[in-house]
Length: 259
Image (cartoon, rainbow, N blue to C red; front, side, top):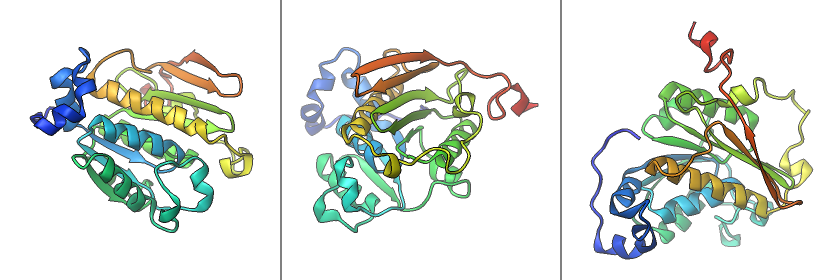
């Protein structure tokens, strides 16, 4: 995180975040760091629901939400940020209403547009990190290039059917998304979640892990998922960890990209 003045905690903050304040790893200074943090969330769907709810409840100072979709009935099986009364409403507006009720002290900024190469730097330039709540390969590559350009981390997550994975990418000396996946799959090669189906709770599990990793990164505590890909199999109820390394020949972050 870039250096900025840490806000003081109010009496209400001390009550709201009492369980955080009791943790030696967080305490008052850590909670003030959370209140100073600015996080950009790309996608307010299944992953984004859990990410947003837990970041805002943790006391993040500012959360920007990028999504150009509206709430549909088929979303509600997994997108717990929204509800039946919000059908047809833009997801950013639906999220803003729910999150504002959860924690009015977090500033929610809506970006009802696509995160693409024409908008990415403008949307992300004032944030400390980007958390991935998308289901689009194209958008993930855009997030990757944006994080590398701005020098901020990329909290990655993805889900498919009963499976999910998470990591922190684009950190100093750590791998980027293109180190893992050098090229996107050919169009039509990989089924979308709409075509393949997905267990509704899986995005909640991965999104919660992403929120946890974002909080850890902001606070500088624990062992973050840098150089590690966490893989989740809900059907077998099993987690595995795969070591991942920076590719020196990566076209995005390797030596060749700086030649």
